[in-house]
Image 1 (cartoon, rainbow, N blue to C red):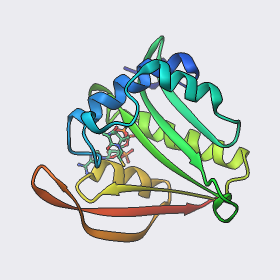
Image 2 (image 1 turned 45 degrees about the horizontal axis):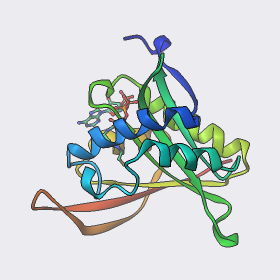
Image 3 (image 1 turned 90 degrees about the horizontal axis):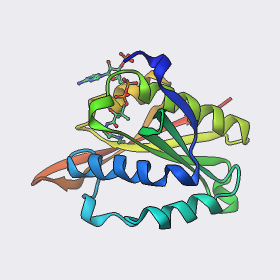
Image 4 (image 1 turned 120 degrees about the vertical axis):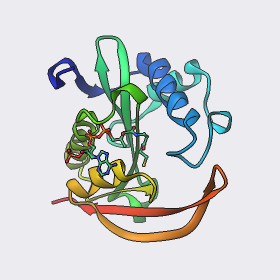
Length: 171
Ligand SMILES: CC(C)(COP(=O)(O)OP(=O)(O)OC[C@H]1O[C@@H](n2cnc3c(N)ncnc32)[C@H](O)[C@@H]1OP(=O)(O)O)[C@@H](O)C(=O)NCCC(=O)NCCS
């Protein structure tokens, strides 16, 4: 699959089902996130559809990687909701298992950085597990720095996992 076949664009309410499918598949792997698919907040596509409809521009956005109608992955960027954090935005991302290691995550992080710059966000941040070398590599490639480590923050499949906090000041 060449990267030319993948479109990176702002997610719309119609993408809700594809975004949830992607999230469910990733959570079902039980190794990348702090919760499993039974602990998801939103499971009903129509609920997510309405939430996306209510997103205010510059406050939060799903940016999706799509191949035609199929959602291959997404990055969710969420701006700080109070005065003291308005200059920051948090993000989380997920790709369907069959579509990793092909540069799509790189395109999504770039798109999130572009979105942040367009909306005057000064700092982007995220977290990952120390057991996720792909995510660590991806964030460090973009100049995110390790701001801290929460040791044994999670227990995943019976094993302790450290949480690494990454941040990048945007210029
Ligand atoms: C993490 C994730 C979003 C990255 O997206 P992706 O499309 O796979 O990433 P890319 O292909 O753009 O980049 C991955 C980089 O990691 C590197 N990489 C892959 N496996 C690696 C490993 N075991 N050790 C070190 N680097 C590794 C790749 O070579 C690539 O670097 P490069 O561009 O310099 O060659 C995606 O793999 C995913 O959804 N994973 C499961 C869910 C998840 O982990 N979400 C993030 C939670 S914080």
